[in-house]
Image 1 (cartoon, rainbow, N blue to C red):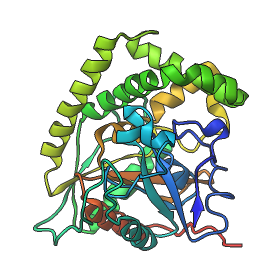
Image 2: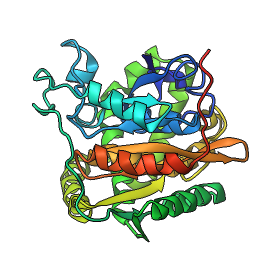
Image 3: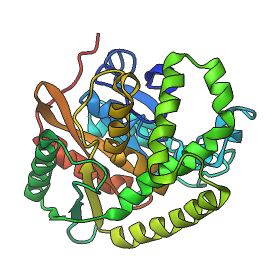
Image 4: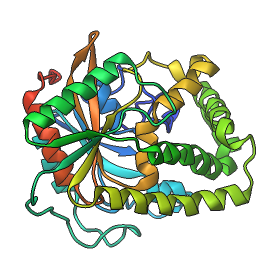
Length: 334
């Protein structure tokens, strides 16, 4: 198996990796890869490379590591948001890999002690199409990918309806508050030990976080942020129930140029906003899959499907319906 860890310069946490990421190290030589995702680092490289990436529900795939490793004893956002998941050339391969990875592991403090399997669906699945949450206007090619995926899902029997869902935008803003504040005690060490890309990216991340939260949020904002997260999770689960999924962009922009998030501060802030579909999902802990829809201006296009907790099979079924109608973009295995 391959891995996406380290494919972003400086190990950046935002999932902001350009089209080259994954094409060689993550996916040029293997059929199935494994990655971890705290802000899109499974879903976004997969989308940029024309393959499938699954971020499972928190607890479904073990995140246990050797005691003492930072993922285990790190800040709360790392423990609750970072998950392991597969990347694959097809939905079927990704589903098989997910089943193999979803083995119960009682060493994982947040793991579930059983492998979940969804039962047969009763009645049609509704799809809520969410284009924009007020953070970044979608690029025309992104809108086209959403329209195409919505049409294909309709052909497959899904009931598609456009939704306004501002809670996803609120969740994305909470990501910038809670993760940035959890990282703050480590910033000095990260600047000292990291490369220049790491240092610049940290600066840009805190500048982007300061726009909604100010340069130095206090402990009250942090506590209230965690409390608000619980409310958003409940609201979204009530909306989705057992028969509704969401169709969203992967990003408000098509795959962007490599290192765009470290070359210009204004560009970086725009990219943080554009990644709202990537950052909102980890905050809420729901499963999501990115699936290709074809090419746009020579670059891979994709959409994201979000389901209720432990509804991986439901969103994978919808992803399969999209894949069945999309042109194949399978990388050459050398």
